[in-house]
Image (cartoon, rainbow, N blue to C red; front, side):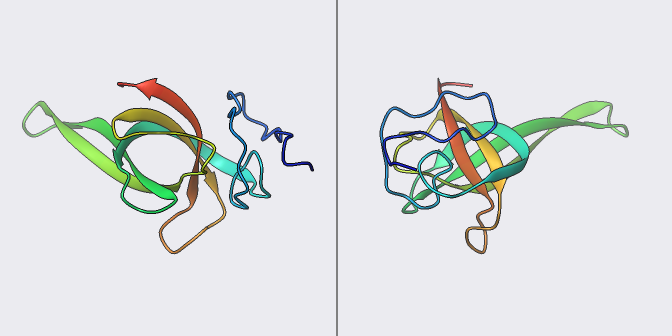
Length: 114
């Protein structure tokens, strides 16, 4: 596949406009996505080529008749063709393990806020 062509990853998302040479990019490389698709907020962008996505949920505690806030943080690979900043809402998809802690890849930037 030519690097200017964008692969169809099988998920209804907007493909990135920029082109990258990353082998672990689902659009321009050979990485396949499978499994679950999650949406979350970018919490950290300190690693090279990776971000930390935070998802917040509420869980009901029967004893106190209240809701408790829970959060989970997931490390995800960030292809160079997708530009994100801290605080953006992103969509991530499961893939094969890329490293010890990274099994997700960013497939779409949904914009600012949540």
